[in-house]
Structure formats: C-alpha cells, structure tokens
Image 1: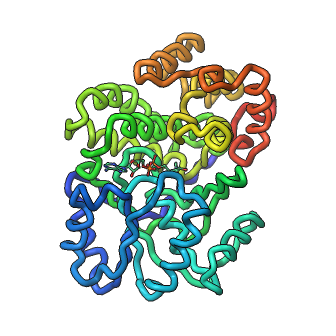
Image 2: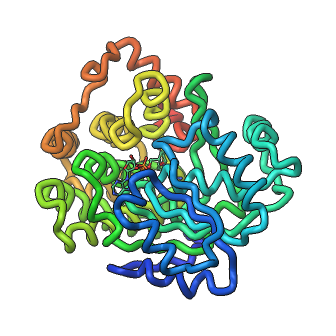
Length: 363
Ligand SMILES: NC(=O)c1ccc[n+]([C@@H]2O[C@H](COP(=O)([O-])OP(=O)(O)OC[C@H]3O[C@@H](n4cnc5c(N)ncnc54)[C@H](O)[C@@H]3O)[C@@H](O)[C@H]2O)c1
C-alpha cells in the first residue's frame, strides 16, 4: 500500500510565536475574529499593537459552536464593512476559527443564505470570492488550524453543516501555547479530549495510513500523560506546550483521514442533548474502541501499540482516564437509554463520518 499525506498549511509552533503575525501580514489589511474574553485578557490590544493600522475590522462576539442564527448577521456585516480586507486572522478556539472559515467564503450577493444553500446542497463549489485565513488557536483541541473543515450549526432546525473548500485550508497556522495559559480547567479538559478523539478516530478509520498513525500515536501518548497533570496545574508552561503540540499532531492526523463514529455520534448528542463538543466526541471512546477492535489487523496493531493486546484492559484504561477527568462514559449518564443509544449508533454509522469507521460495514 502506498501512503499519501497532504497538508498545505504553513505551520508555526512555539512559545510566543504569535509575534510572527506582524511579518506574515506585512502590506495587507486584516480583519480579526476572536472570542469574547480576548479583549479583557489583553489579546485584542496585543494584536492591535502587532498589526497597527493594518487591523481594519474586529469581530469579538464569537459564541461557542458557530450557529447560523448569529453567523448570518456577522457574515453580512463583515462583507459590507470589511469586504476589501485581504486577510482574516482568527485568534481563538475552534468556534472562532470555524467562524472565520465561513466568513472568508464570499458569495456573489454577499448574502449568508446563498452560502447556506450551497452547503445544504452538499456539493463542491467554487466561491465567487474568498480571503486568506491565518489561524492561531487559543485552545489545545480542535486542530481546525490545520484542517479545511468548519462545522456550522443550526440548532433551531437541529442540523449541522460541514464547510470544506480548497480555500478553507488556513494559509498559516500559528500555534503559540502561551495563548492557552488562560483557558479554564473545564475547557482545558473538553478541548484536550476533543484532540484525543481526533487521534483515535484517525486510527480506526478507513482512510488511515502509517503517516497519519505516526501523528496519532504520538498525540495519544502525550494526551494520556499530560492532560490530567495539566488540569491540576493550569499555569504549567511545559504541559501547556505539550498539549498544544499534541492537539496539533492530532489535527494533522485527522486532516488526512477525517473523523469517524465517535464524532458522528457526537453531533446527535450536541444537537439533541446539548453536550459540549469535546465531551460529546469523547465519552463513547471506550465503547467505539470495542467496536473497532478485531476488524483489521493493521488497525489492531496500531491500537495495541498504545493500549496493549487485551481489549478489556484497553477499554478499562480509557474509561479510567475519562473518569479521572470527571467525564462520565455511559449513554445513560447523559439521559439516553439503551434502546435510544443503539438507535443513535445505528444512525451515526450511516452518517458521512460514521462511514469512515472501520467497523461500519460489519455493523
Ligand atoms: N474545524 C474542525 O476541524 C473542528 C474540529 C473540532 C471541533 N470543531 C468546532 O470547534 C468548536 C469548539 O471549539 P473549542 O473546543 O476550541 O471551543 P470554543 O472555541 O467554543 O471555546 C470554548 C470557550 O473557551 C473560551 N476560550 C477560548 N480560548 C480561550 C483562552 N485562551 N482563554 C480563556 N477562554 C478561552 C471561549 O470564549 C469559549 O467560551 C465547535 O464548534 C466544534 O464544532 C472544529
């Protein structure tokens, strides 16, 4: 089998590397998309100082899980008021980066509903215009800075859309662990588990290959070791750096494989039960590990490099790890009974991500 790995993002990593924004945007006008706490944390002023009068527009009211209800207005104001800017810089968690990915895709009319109709059609399209994206994550989780995908939610209609175009790959990713020092414990855990889920989902995936496996195994080892320690010591710079790198490696792994069953289930749990993304995509990992085991010798070997050869012990290790972070691992813990859970798994296996799961055909 010939493996191919492709990721076009110019990726920078290191403590303080946000500084590179100044040179990366030289001679260009910039719009900033960031999270609500960023101003109070001094981040907006810091970016303003780095960019000077190149910074022409700021969006700082990005809410968790970009939803069409808010995005419509943000999108239309952005194209009316900052349509001339050349670069969009997203500094925030996955919500800010995914919002920015939606903003950079310009429709002919400037109307958001035109974009939504294209997403609803689910077919590839070439946008009328687009802008360049620089993504600087402030959480160690989504990997959105090195993937082309954006998840757009429509909670009122209980739907989600996946945006994915050539132009939604960020041009540059700036992973500066210093930006993550202020992430509270709960978000540190849920985003870290999102990264763990990306790495595992890239392994039990029909698109996996030895290159994506290399990133995934390394990410999983780091997360299993660092996340519980970081939760107890949020100001630890070394642990913040290792989790930032782990989330990046997990992002690189699934940038080439996409996610699988645990994510497919998570969309249902978020839309119908309001579970935060990182918990929704990780509480089923011990269960999905059991469903993945025994379908493909190469996949088993990769999983066994991390968890050993005994499935029950492997599931117990993952369960204990999640419990140690106060994450419950059973559907019943989230108000979903056994028959509802079974129906949800069956439905999730039919979804686009569910079909990437190595056990999907046998199920
Ligand atoms: N595009 C992808 O490949 C991909 C992958 C996974 C998840 N996602 C999406 O990402 C979103 C979730 O992103 P997330 O988990 O990073 O959370 P988030 O961006 O929603 O942030 C969580 C909370 O933490 C706050 N926050 C962020 N950075 C902070 C900091 N440095 N200090 C203090 N507070 C901070 C935010 O304001 C928010 O309240 C979801 O919409 C999910 O669908 C996208």
